[in-house]
Length: 88
Length: 270
Image 1: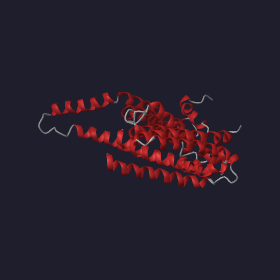
Image 2: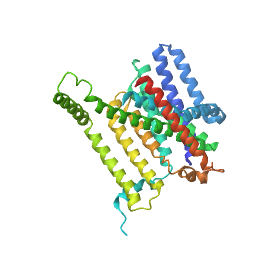
Image 3: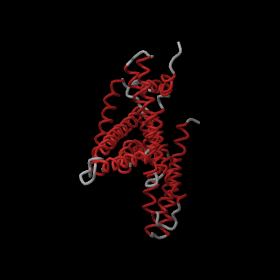
Image 4: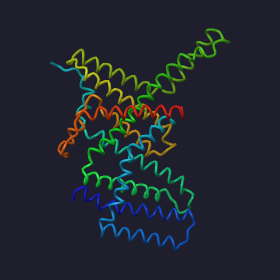
């Protein structure tokens, strides 16, 4: 298995894992009913199954995450410059 | 002929693999991503009773892993390796520019503080009084920073000796002297940031602060004297390697952008 195959296999799973926990935490913080929480969790799990059965579904999400990946070095270097000047 | 030892001491950095700066910057950036998102997440949902720090770590680490994985897949599939490397390169140059400006400003502040110390309130006291005041001011500054001053002096004298050695025993090429100067500057930066680490590490998170140190170290590994390192290593992976002349303006742009952002944040926060 090449690194690309490994990465394309793992990133949808980690994404859904993070999204599910975050969704549950945010709905708990906003005090939203159990029905909505169950529905949302099931929807996220369906999306996870969809990612592996219909690979075309992953395209928009992957490009969104890629955008974050490209913005991260420049954005975080700005944040770090601010941090260095504020705290040293 | 016995080659002088001082010439060898800094020479090891010249054989660093050329992918190291980019990889170091990306590692640092992702550590900062993890650390800072954790920080923001905790301030946002930290009050929820279900929230634990382990849960926060799981969210942040798996989200960062999915961002890294998706970016990696897109970069490899669309052959954007060079584009991504340039993004990391420009952001590294920005950090480099801002921190260079910061160091120059701090050195200036240190020396103007020294000269201002004995003339600030010497009107009321005698000459002896103000002299002892000046001495205690200088001593207090030195005592607080004894470690970093010692380390800096060792680095500066080693760099000076090494540059001197280029002309005294070596072939006297200016490019070698520049490279040695820059390597000395790299060590000074890493020492300085590591020293300041204790001031900001507790305020953000240890992961983010460590990521900042790694990213800065990686950005200072881009030697201004070795322009062709970066593109030559990518050669086998690219169908049409970008010419070297692109790197100089990109690097200069990033460096200047860093200085500009330093100026903006300096005016805001001091």
